[in-house]
Image (spheres, rainbow, N blue to C red):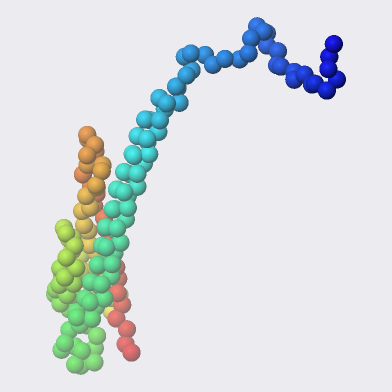
Length: 160
């Protein structure tokens, strides 16, 4: 006889009548994926660091080009023409001022590609390039050692 206060809990029925069990070959398969997941995370972190180094180099070169253009448009004025009231940019003075400004920045390997008056009569354009070395990618077999970043800036001379 059944006790009226007790309740029976139904058990799931299976075709073979046994409770489900883990198969021996499946045990620990997630454990094998963990080293691969860690390796993927390390590679993604290395890529992020290398791209950040390139972005930093790009910003440094762009800032140096803007500074050089501003200095070159100011210092590059022909003093004789300025005394007469004209604003004439002397190409030799423009390049000299740009080189001095870029050199004062102390960026390693930066190259002054072009510093010349133009495109307008009262404008100076400065172009720079700089090699940037990767931190992690150069450690890979056949991987690149780095890249070259380029920047260009134009400054205009205005009268106050």
